[in-house]
Image (cartoon, rainbow, N blue to C red):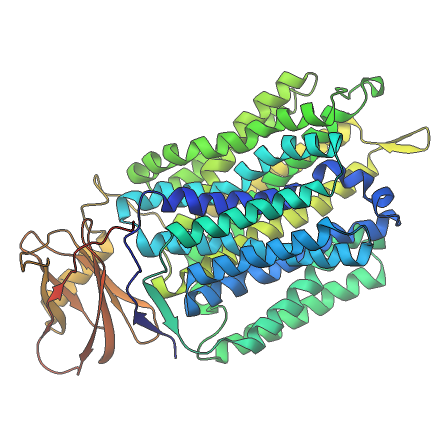
Length: 579
């Protein structure tokens, strides 16, 4: 059984928590991006065949895809900060391994370890949900979600500059140094999560998911080398379908599954995850096309003839704009809701790709395309964790966001495979070298636009929520309905939320968590501190209360199923400030 244990945080979430967690996300993006400037040179640098050199990239993709949902679940069970530090520590070890070798197999091993850092994104979002008051949560999650683009945008020109003027192994030393800094800042600033799920780790589920993802992502990433209709590619896809189907059936029978598929099957969660795949596709297309367009020689007739560093600088606004959209997202979301901001983001992405079809003849035009796409992708990425967090219990935040991050990764993987195939099939051979054509670039932008259109249709079918004028102060319609049910049914919990002096606390958020760790109801206290929550069934529960300016409280309570409401007062402790 999965239950929520009332764990007190080690300290009040201070102002530095959000930037530190976002920095951890940026470090993850740097790890992913640092090889982009030297991808075409990897066969020479590692003294291997081009097909074998791609395993340096594929290994990180596979380990990241596997680690993301697993680390999210481990964070729910054993502490999100602890697993965040563990993810970054494994990345540092992997970076150091890669920094001191030019052997292909050792390099692949190091890159595999680096992929574990991908778990930092859902863990950071989970920590934010557990610690931050509602008024700060929207913009904080937006910044964390966008950090993957911010880090990529900043790292691309920096990595190009390093690769152009020094030994390429320095890139790994830089990533290791950033990882160590992120670990130190996390330990110094970020308190442990106040919410934790109990239960055993679903090892068979983790092994089954690992096998299924590897069987699926291997042909996605290597299909262009093996042939999309080859027996190996089709066989692996078939095996992946069988393994993932059996894994799903097994997860439905487990008391504490790695991924709660019943929660995942909810319309809001399912459609958000499917839309995340489409956003991932659209994000990676621009990252593949624009650097190639900028660096192609002008003699090709459509290349812009820019250096590696200039190409990185032209694409950097993609990530920077994503960072600046975080506060914009917070304002839009508080007024219109995350569904609307997702739709707006997808429309902006569509406009960016549509306009980009005619903006491929000068470097400044690629900057304009990067800015527009960055704004749209930033809004879309910022909306995804808010939609997930609003649809799952607090005890499943890490695992649910881990799965959502995995969906984005699958989108980028599919995008890489499809666009790579398109550019290869539309390229011209000049002097024995395949050169991408302008037609191939435009077809790639068209594919991205189609993916955005699919994402837009999915977003339109998301359940709408009318946000309150002051979302941090007023209960949601669900909370008001729960309060009304409690008053009508007269079976549940009621009482007052009090401060350390015994005075009532108004507008405190009170959440009812059942024995499975799932949210069974929520409300906010009235002006006199009173609250009421209906219970769906008898049994043990946890009443979690929090309010700005006070420490959080998690109080166990049991309802026998008979009689009126059980009276439970919730005295909030004074907030503590981390030195």
